[in-house]
Image (cartoon, rainbow, N blue to C red; front, side, top):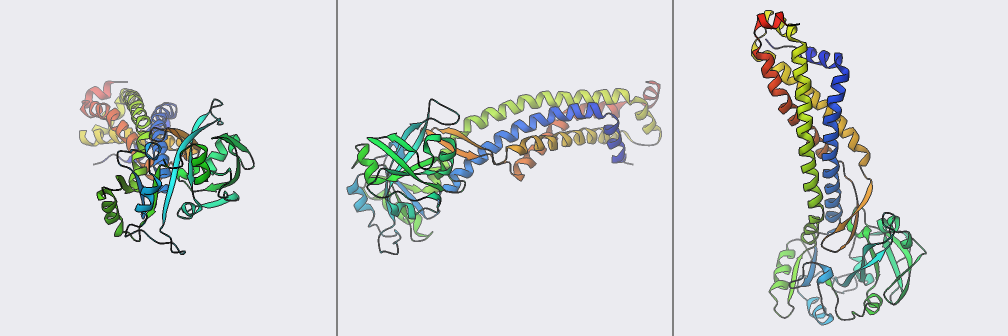
Length: 387
């Protein structure tokens, strides 16, 4: 015969102060874990949203990022006529030669400045991306004009519409703000390829080529063709693969957050264990009465164990509520691949909250098993004598 769950709920309600204090300890642990998972999820979303399944990024062989790659214009001319590259409505190959570097700008978080990615490209390269212009207009070829990502405009006061940035050989006017959804494009500054490369004395030492394949089946064939061409000496990969590699930026924070959460979980488990041991000590007479009424040792063990799980579920739900305000909060983190800041939003998703509740259940299980076992082992007469 099983003990009704209402019995456990009543006991948690009667000991409301102890219940809330223990649940709060579990909640803080869960909130820390969810915050870290939400950060990493947001970072992954930013990089995943940047890529197009038909896009292939071409770097110099040996290059690990656009920042340390060098593609010449001659290589670009040979590369863009490769079979399998899509053609635009004007009959031109959909291949964008681009230059990437970093500039330093003071941000809302760092008056001393942070590195921001500057991308030089043509308007054809802009058209290859799924972007919308929220304010202003696109830069004009041959002019010192730039368009900034929405996150860059928000986080860097000098990069707002109508302002002027000083880099390269002079002043550049911000003429537009672009929005790439949740993508990493929002953390970049774009300008005309010819003007940007000239200002940085890199007319022929550019960074990468972005090409678009005709269809999904052509993507691996085109990648192999580019990688096998000894004349080009390039390394081609899907755009998705390139940005997936950049999620390494969040790995140290994720490892540190999980480590802190585990340390806190040990303390929370002991708190839950202490609460349940105290409950067993105070309810010795109840336990004896339950045995007299015919409830088995197994039923008592399960009942007290279930009570610990209910306590941990409460803590897990409170932890989700504590972490929920972080959802969609914008922040930035240094990208160890591009040596620039990447802006993104915390993503407190349903799977992450479910993971938090499961984590809380594990703490409750660890903290409740021994006290439940102690309650089940109490002899009837001894339990009835205890007060």
